[in-house]
Image: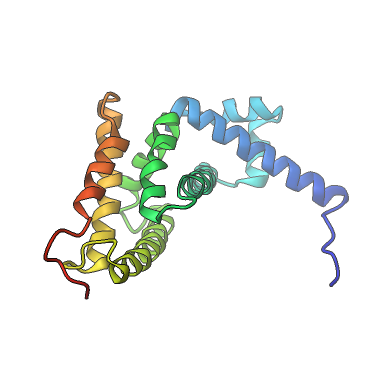
Length: 202
C-alpha cells in the first residue's frame, strides 16, 4: 500500500497556520467564552485580524470549528472513561471535562440556543450533532436492554433522548451555579435507568 504523503511547502505551512489559529481560538474561548475577540486570537498567533479570514472567513465558522474540537476532546475523554465500561458511564464521566472548561461550555450553550433558528449558521451543526448522538446512544441502550443491563419498559430511543436532555440541562444549571455537582447528579439519573425487579427484556 502506498504511503500517503504529508503536505509539503506552502500547503503544509497553510495547514499548520490554520491549526495554530484554531488552537488559539480554542484557548481564548476556554478563557473568555463567546466574548473572546478575533483580535485576541490573532494576537495569540501573531497575525493580523484580517489574516484570520483567509482560514476562517467568518467568526461563526471559527466558533463552530472550536465546538467541533471541543466535541472531539470530549469524546476522547468519554472513551477513556468508558474503557471497560458502558457508553453511558463514559458520557457521565466526561461531564468532568465540561466543568474544567467553563468558557467552552458557555459557548456551546449560547450557540445551541441561537441554533434553534433555522437561519442560524450553527443550525445544521447542532441538528446533525443531536441526530448522531441520539443514534449512537440509542444503539448502545438497545444492546444493554437485550442483555438486561438497562430498564426495558421504555423505548431505548426515548431513554437516549432523556439522557442527552439531562446532560445539557445540567450544564446550563451548572453555569448558573458552579456548586452544582453535575457528574454526581448525572450518575443519579443513570441509576434510574437500571432495571428493577419485574422488568423483563423486550
